[in-house]
Length: 520
Image 1: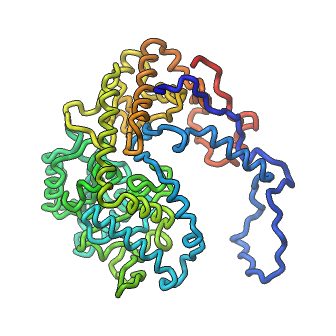
Image 2: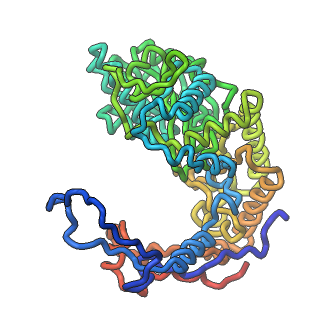
Image 3: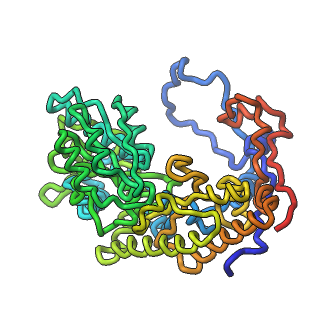
């Protein structure tokens, strides 16, 4: 099977859960309690009225969420190689069972360390794994995700320069092709962002970086491979330029799946790095969380890491909070424990022999799909002057297709779900990829999976040439009909909660419209 000709997704016309139920319905009856009670909350902390929670029985709740799950092209039912830059890999189900063990879930974060030695040992060993994979000297596991880890790195940079009296270093260098969270985090910490353009090869050139550094440079944030999918072969020389100017270099390893066990941040000349555990280490899958980040630094910067840190002392494990120069805790307790445990299990299951094979197969899969995609009329690869292999992703452009058919990234995104494929990622438009299409076939996909993904795009591109109205009016077999932007009031702010939706629109307008019946 290469294309699912008769695919049709469920369309339940399911209302919001706040629109279901009726007063008095219950899923469970909680018995009364006549024991000791806590003191009442202060008056200014109490609600003026009870929350408007829906009142439903258990069957209604179960049906509601099962229906929603059937209306979603979720990771466990769909080929989501289309969710580019998220590292959509298979999260082993057995790791979910491990993380749900009462040995973990029944622990309390306030327990004395002597009663949680097993968990602390696991976290310490996980840090040792990350040290081996990055070359860094010490790791912190507190961050809640990639952006949070990046912000921690920014604060460490800031603390380092402050400790040296370099308060004049208020500029952070990043690039247009780097994850936007890097300049955003630096800006949130008060730094001025110096954006360096990428060259025709799809990465920062040495001369451009030399022109950007100055005595005000605090540091550099960079992905490698960049979000263009291209590896910068001058990465260590870029780090030398920043170091010569007195700055630090932070390596955003959100794209580390293509270099895992092969290239390390330390050998690239970097002082800090972070891993996205919910991407690279299969816990649980791509960017849909619950996320966790790991921040690694050289010995010189270790004193600034967030606390507490798990340390090994005389064969036992303890929490180190005695770090006067630390940036302090960046969240409560030790991090997202469930995700940390899943990452540890994923690493140990593969071991040092097979971790590099993850990267090799992911790169092979990516280039296999690229070969098929480049054959499609109107589809091109960004930065065509660079003939080196793309690693984790390929940034395609549908600009040629748009010019010849009038249909581009948005229209194809409306059609591909008709074949059971989620819509593709369209970021970096128009800077690196006009009419963008980004795919990321990780090591989890078989050759059959990759052929099916390419075949769907081959079909839809052919339809765009032969029957453009069919593509333009898609989706026809999805759970939700094509969005109608003109239905929104000009300038209106979308309501952020169900309550605001109820107040703004009548009940009839809240019901999900069924997809229009149309050709396959």
